[in-house]
Amino acid sequence: MSKARMEALSDGVIAIVMTILILEFKVPEIDASGGDMALVHDFVRSLPLVLSYIISFLVLIVWWMSHHQLLHGVRSVDRRTILLNGAFLMCIAFVPYPTALIGRYPGLVFPSVLYGIVGLFCGLSYYGLYHHVLRNNEGHPFSANRNALAFRNTWLHLTVYAVAIGAAFVSPYGSIAVYAAIPIYFFLKKNG
Image 1 (cartoon, helix red, strand yellow):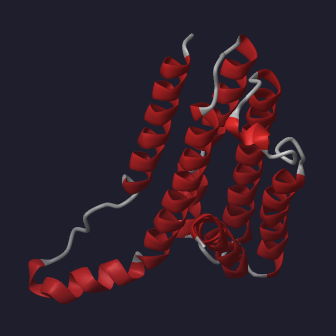
Image 2 (spheres, helix red, strand yellow):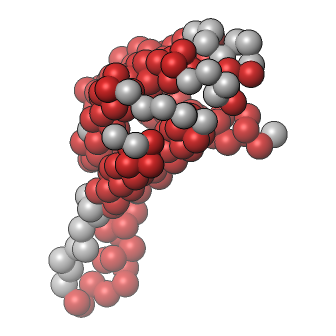
């Protein structure tokens, strides 16, 4: 398989997953006599779902940007690269389910824990791919940084998900706030 085909598959899967997130929203059936206020009330009731959608969409953008930058410097694709990329995409494809759970049941522990577990698996699979690519693609732009193969960033990312999982047992809303902080940190770090 060529690098271009793997990138196309990856972009397609991530785009589909991002699209699936919005399918959780349904147009409400209201009595026409309720008018705009009935729709506003329904929208306000749906705010946890809207928030979970926004968080997951931004998290997926972060994964997509990181994945794109990683694959940009790839010169050769072997069977292991394809399998590791497939494992990452499989984990990414699972994101809509815990997103919907958090949106519907934001005050419960299990949705926040499951979201974190999925995030951990996304992180582990991505970093497996990351380290394999850097070891097998001499001259990759990321390898110019002598710490590129260090697990420092891996552990930071995975630690944040682990902390969010633990926080869910104390406050599911606190856990959701930690998940929201992940893309915010990424965008501030990259642009600031």
